[in-house]
Length: 243
Figure 1: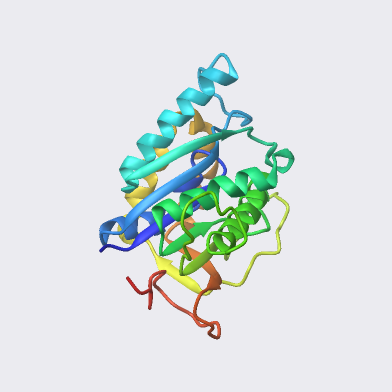
Figure 2 (figure 1 turned 90 degrees about the vertical axis):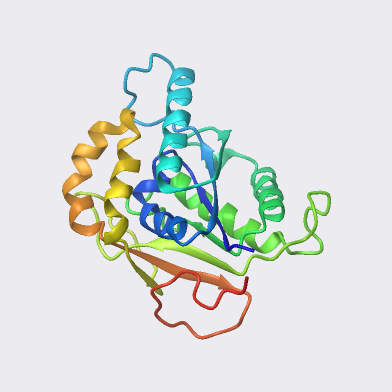
């Protein structure tokens, strides 16, 4: 039985920009990967040639699928919540959808954003963090969503974090990392996945210097583990995970 990794994001392009190295490395070692994106990214400033939100949503869904294929994500879906307004969605409803998917896919490890909202402190990222955290714990809780499949307990929850900040942006209070991944061997793959988001070409140009300088390593914080333990530094998201 192979290891399974579930990644939960807010927008198409999150999967490669924030998590691309970790995902590509996991794919190379044969991990089965599922990705859930809560919105189709229709509130963004970069719209390509789309003439409506509906058209942009379809384009960005296709870009997300192409990026997932490049990174090696076998299962992916976009849930279709409203971009930029996750804070107004029903927390219980969205968390329930995530609980259902955790119980169905049975991931060993779950990846998502931290509560600060990542480098751009996006409120949707903060909400995804809160929703995923709740779902991670509730998926195994005997009093939560008992109609959404058999209980299942993932072994670990990680938040992506950072050792640098974006110039001229609000500086968040980032979480201290417990895992550092050397993603140099898959950096080109990470870039190709980002390039699949053609509507985001202006963003790619804008962030290319930062991406090239800091994109060789990714940092993650162990947020929850089924085995009580002191925090320690690691270079492997799956170190000690039982198959």
